[in-house]
Length: 263
Image (tube, rainbow, N blue to C red; front, side):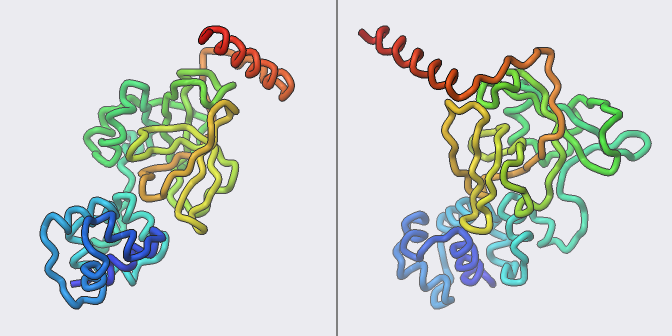
């Protein structure tokens, strides 16, 4: 079994000390040390489930697969839910559909389907039920999917716009400042500007175009898919973008109005 070495590899990739990881798993540091150094290897099923869930890796992989032979890219894919490398196959891990000529379809994930997509993104039967969008100007050799966004965090792109995204397989190659659709475990489908911190801290910094929204970090093991912004489609004409002086003035006015309302 490879449980001990695999726990150590995954712990180090997440920047955790033994003490910090033991706290996350609900065990003592000495117990974790025994697991990692194969002194004792009889964890309960509850502990195995806890460790498996935390690292987003199946128990079968934790026990039977030597993760030391995996590249960084393969480990990133594995912890995002893709077990393709443990089976030895070369099947594409992205669930997708093709047309009658074997060309990749551009599936549409509208607002109603977004909630289900975070669960069914890897389910071929779910993907097949999505409507298709035909955009003849898209590159035939690339994979696209269209997502409908909500809210004003990416203003001036209007609410309910459709974002056409190109599938990104290698997340480490995302350039800073790239706008992307990110499919996450906790937050669902979000549209943000990415600053790539994967090599430094295994995270992505997600920022909005709307300055009223604060940037936030997202650990890479929470990311399921990333689609690079290509086009957006909207029935609305974007409003003019405010310059900094106008924006500051507007924010100050809003604060004064809120203060008056409280009084």
